[in-house]
Length: 188
Image (cartoon, rainbow, N blue to C red; front, side, top):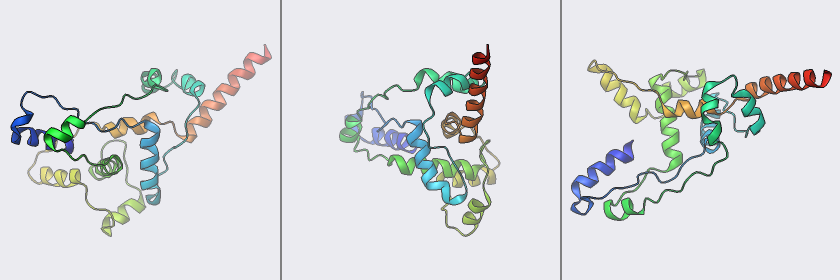
């Protein structure tokens, strides 16, 4: 979002940008890489994200019970398209926020804003109190909006990324269901 806002400002300031369209995404991030980045940063705060690649047949079975998983099932295994943002870099002079920094700051923002589905662990709260974690830009925005009586929160795309990575606990549950079904089929 910050890159998009910056690009809008630059497009207004640069006459060469008139009449052009710009791609403002440097890379498409696969869910597994997203999960690994979040896991590596937040493990020290007591969070445990699954970083395993679930077998497709297990996801297929799980999709019968989970509507969100059923929606993304057709996208699993597809190669993400490459985005060429050279035009934005040359004409606008854009310097994009690095992928890892953007993902980590997004996760901190979700935790600090208390977005539904995100709870702060004791370790995270302690680190915030000790100022080991900087207040995220969205956290600062939240405080200002709260002070002036206006708060608008929207569902987070981070939430959908985290929800689509099936945790180890659910992997075991779905594996147990699969084994039970196979056993029943074998008995007949």
